[in-house]
Structures are given as C-alpha cells and as structure tokens.
Image 1 (cartoon, one colour):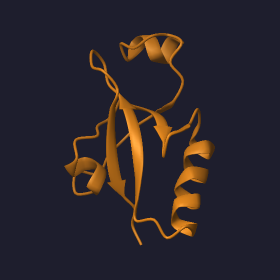
Image 2 (cartoon, rainbow, N blue to C red):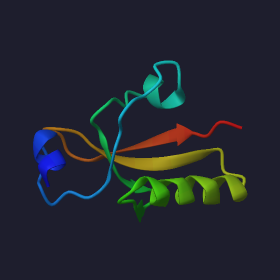
Image 3 (tube, rainbow, N blue to C red):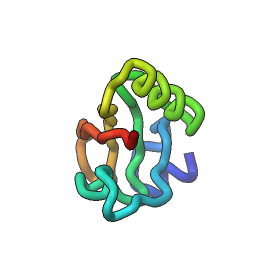
Image 4 (spheres, one colour):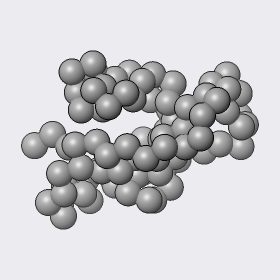
Length: 87
C-alpha cells in the first residue's frame, strides 16, 4: 500500500512496478517508464516479478513475439500496450 500511495494510485492496487526502462527498447519506445505499474500481462493478473516472468516465458514457448501489458500510471486510466519480446 505504501508504494502504491507514493505512485499516486489506489493503495489496493496490485501489480509489478517498473523500476527502469531502456530508452531504446520496445517498451521504452512505446512510452513505458519508471513508476508505471503492470497490472496484467496477456490478460492475466501479475502481482510480482515471478508471475510476470511466467507469462513472458509462456508467450515465448507459444512462439508469440509480444505480450499485452495493462499499465496503470498516476492520474490515468489503465491502458494496454503490446511489447515485443526479444529473441
């Protein structure tokens, strides 16, 4: 709750906080930034890094080239962003 509050979102928000984004990555080019919160990946709730990694690994195993992330940012409605996976 303290982290959510410091990020300006509801204290009941569950997700994975983005700590850093490489500017030249697909995520960086699509506008993801430090402090954004990933609340779902491929429509599955993610509440920790392990859950997010599992979704990404499952997508790779299924030969997908991207994952759909639902992102929450201070003062905005959640938005979906497709992020390409590195090979």
